[in-house]
Amino acid sequence: SPEQGAGSLAGGFDMMHLLTLCVAIGLDRVIGDPPALWSRLPHPVVLFGAAISALEKHLNTARFTPDGRRLNGVLSILLLLFVSVMGGAVLSWLFHFFGLAGFLFEAVVAAVFIAQKSLGDHVQAVARGLKRDGVEGGRLAVSMIVGRDPKTLDGPGVCRAAIESLSENFADGVVAPAFWYAIAGLPGLLAYKMLNTADSMIGHKNERYIDFGWASARLDDLANWPAARISALLIALAAWLRLGWDAGRMSLSAALRDHGLHRSPNSGWPEAAMAGALDLQLAGPRIYGGVPVSESMMHAAGRGDADHRDITRGVEVFYAACDLLLALVLFTVLLASF
Image (cartoon, rainbow, N blue to C red; front, top):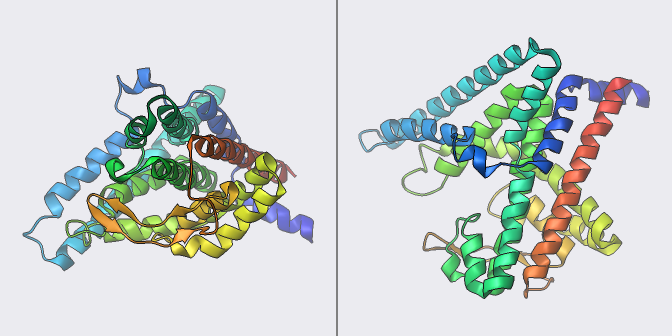
C-alpha cells in the first residue's frame, strides 16, 4: 500500500539522526561559523586538508609512474575515508553515553559541517562590496569564494561568479552534508566532507593531479549525485515561493534543459536552476588560473547584465531553499514516526 511504501522509505533513515539534523541545520542557520572560535581552533576541514596534503606530498611525486600515482591516489582516499568513518563512529559512540547532552553535542558537530550562514554571508558580502566600492570592492569580496581570477571579471561577471558559487555550494555545502548525515550519521557526514575536501584540493584535471586525484574526483561525483538533483528541485520550489510561479517554472525548466552544459556532472543542476530562477545567464567562458575555460551559457535566453540586486535575490532564494530542506527533514521525521 502507499502507506507501507512511505513507511519503508522513511525507515531507511534513523529517527535520531533526523532529529539531530534538524537541530544542526537550525544551529548553523543562526550561528554559522563564529570567527572568534575558528581563529583559536583549527576547523576540522583544515585538519582534513592537512592530512590530504601530507599524503599527496609523499605519494604524488615524479618517482612514481602515472599508474603508480593513480594507485596511490586510490589507496590514499580509501584510507582517508576509513579514518573519517571510524572517527565519526567513535564520536557517535561517545555521545551516546551523555543522553540529551550527547544529542546536543552531536548536533553541534554536525552543524560545523553545514555551510548555510557562512555561504550566505560571504555571497552577500559581494553585493555589499559592489554597492560600496564598485567593481574593485566586488572583485575583492568574490575572490574569497571563487577560484577564477577576479581581475578578469567586470561588474556583471562578479555578480554571476558569486551567484554560481552560491548555487554550487548550496548543493555540496548544505544539501550533500545533510543528505549523508541523514543516511549514515556522523560517519557518513565526516566521510563526505573528507571526500569533498579532497576533490577541491586534488581533484583537478591538470598535470599535477590528473592521476593522483582521479579517484577522489570520481567518488565525489558519485557522492554528490543525489544532492545536486535535490538542490535543483529545492531552488525551483524556493524561486516559486519567493519570486513567483514564472520564476519557479523557469528554474525547473532551465535545470532540466541546461544542466548538461556544465563541465561538472553535478554542479550544472543547481546553477542552471538558479539561472532560471533569476532569469540570468550563468557559466559560459571564464578564466581559472590564467587558463580559459570554454562552456556554453546556461539559460542563454536570460539577462547578461547582472548587478548586486541579483545577488541579493539569489541569497533570498538560497535561504528559502535551506528552509525547504529543513521542512523536508521534518516531514521525513513525521513519516518515520508512523
